[in-house]
Image (cartoon, rainbow, N blue to C red; front, side, top):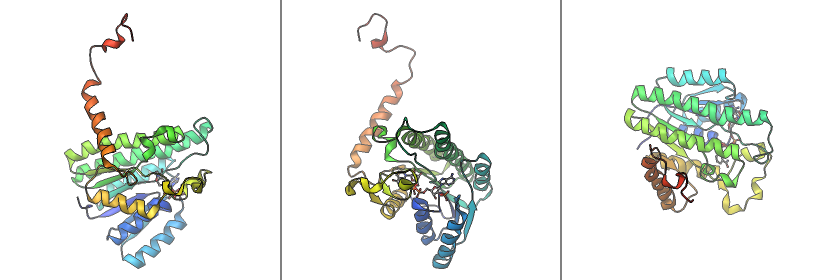
Length: 267
Ligand code: NAP
């Protein structure tokens, strides 16, 4: 699959993976719309990309934990018919473990990683479905598959996004747009420091560079993948896992209680 021509809207484009998507997509000739809170940092990146690549770059400062800011971006996705690629990347992590965060922090991460991510992916899906073309890239995480390895609200938010990607990909196959979920492992960006963690505490062989991650994810998109896991060496592990889940699906809703749950039957 080639990425459709047109403008790319990228959330979380001020730093990290989002800023690298901006760089790579500008070099491929896509005009850009950059979204994050730090407008000055995005203006700096935009100025550099305009000069080095000649593409047009718009900057929208928005706090995606705020409903009215999410509404502005939804509206842009729907109204701007030039947008053909949506990189749903903005996200945050939490300090500490599953039992250590305040109610306010839990609400904040859910607002950004779940509510905003879902609203924007669905707005893009509606717009691309109506236009019969487009691609949505949802930046999830390998923690969607491995909640035991990390704090549970963050990993749960990424499992949510993977689930939503599977559902939207099915809509996309019918309506002519593509959906890719990207599952990075530990990747060297500011997200670690921002959530009070030291990426250097991980063994070096577990940490990917952000450049490698984005280049691999774009290769996966070029190949038409619906799920891209850049660090996973044995692709068969994902294929088997996914096939096992799909094989279970026809058995998951039944009038009859499974035999082992019949009263009087020994477990
Ligand atoms: P990062 O360097 O911290 O970048 C996060 C981006 O999101 C920044 O541009 C930030 O910009 C933006 N952002 C944060 N809060 C926001 C808000 N309230 N409203 C709008 N934008 C906001 O982290 P990253 O590693 O590149 O993260 C990108 C995505 O990759 C995230 O979804 C993350 O969960 C995912 N991921 C990362 C790793 C990893 O190890 N790095 C692994 C798996 C998945 P402002 O501060 O300017 O708003």
